[in-house]
Amino acid sequence: MTKDLSKKYIPMTETTYYTLLSVIEARHGYAIMQFVSTITKERIKLGTGTLYTMVGRLTTDGLISIVENESGKKTYQITELGRELLERETERLQAQLQDGKQVLEEAGHE
Image (tube, rainbow, N blue to C red; front, side, top):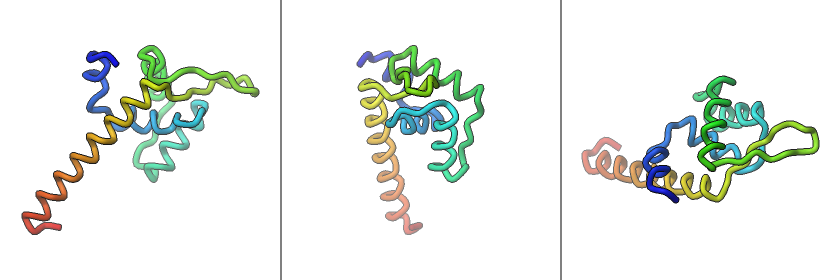
């Protein structure tokens, strides 16, 4: 993985993070929007403009790829590079959460 991609994507925006999570399984655009809305309990609702701009960028950078399916719809799936970045970001977020919990616990606020 190039250092440039790490700098570009770590830390990730929430929309990028959830979009990458959504394409662990191949999904078309509308299914990505539904997955993100469902998993975030509608806290994040991707619009089509946001989604397709992001999908274009993620495809260009090699984090996702376009996969053809039987219906002819364009579907997207995470690549090995995308999975690696997603795992790194998940680990970073876990460490951040643990730090926050520890500090709050020590301060008697948990």
